[in-house]
Amino acid sequence: MTVLALDIGATKFAAGRVYGGRNVRDVRQVDVPREAVWEACRTLLAEVAGDDTVTAIGIGSAGPVDTRSGVTSPLNIPEWKSGFPIVAEVQKLFPGAAIRFAIDGACLALAEHHVGALRGVANGLAMTVSSGIGGGIIADGRVLLGRTGNAGHIGHIVVPGWDVPCECGGVGCVEAIASGMSSVRWARAQGWSGATGAALAKAAHSGDDIALAALHRSGTALGQAIASAAALQDIDLVVIGGGFAQSGAPLWEPLRAAVARHARLEFLGGLHVVLSRITNGATLVGAGVLAAGHATADTVV
Image (cartoon, rainbow, N blue to C red; front, side):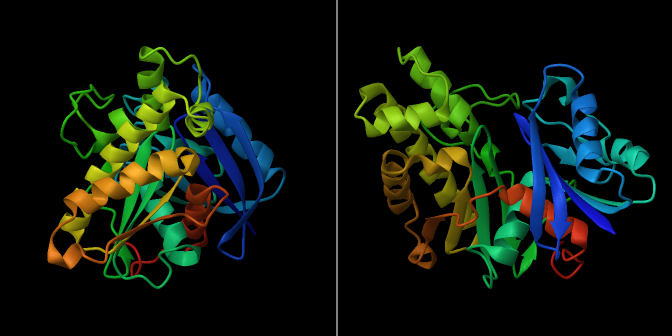
């Protein structure tokens, strides 16, 4: 019996084999191409499966998604932006397999709830801050999916003070301001010459003024969004993973300052924001939990 997990990210596909319901190994990944996107994804899945019979697959995808129809519409994958029937196509590849599909934020929340910082926590928020920004909600011990599967889409909370256009068509979304890609774009417009979020963080730690300003801007917007989400959800723990979240003090100090400034209601007095302890592919881990059937009706709603 072979169980697979697939992570559809904004810039990369990752897939691996699920062992023991929570452990994903034999992971391979490929960059998302500009064209022939499904062909790249299909080849990756076939390579990970090999000649084995696949019995279940968990798919975590950048959103928006529609879990009712099995369609994903990632904003940062142009070829799929208008909608791609990922569940139907994966089912064709593995006709006998059970396919379980969720937005990446829900998979992230599942991972944190099963093996990470939200283990044993009844109410909390899991976020990823990387090339994009996503999230998943734990409410009364269950991961919320919502009407179409997009619950927890914190990247599109609107934050005050900026009117930056977002890929979603809106203006002022926290993803348009604080993601790694958005921060790099802003820094380059100010004259910085680097190209990646990791390079931007390194420059900030070296004292580069533009890089420091970019991370301060991002951290402030993130803190504003987190304070709003915490008040809405009545939570006291937020865990953040993703590559850009590893940027250290230049990002986290303004983030925590903004949380302290905006989360002023008495019931938010114990609000904590922490860095994820899951260092390797939290969305893939959550997709593995989904695939293995640990995410039941009692844990997902």
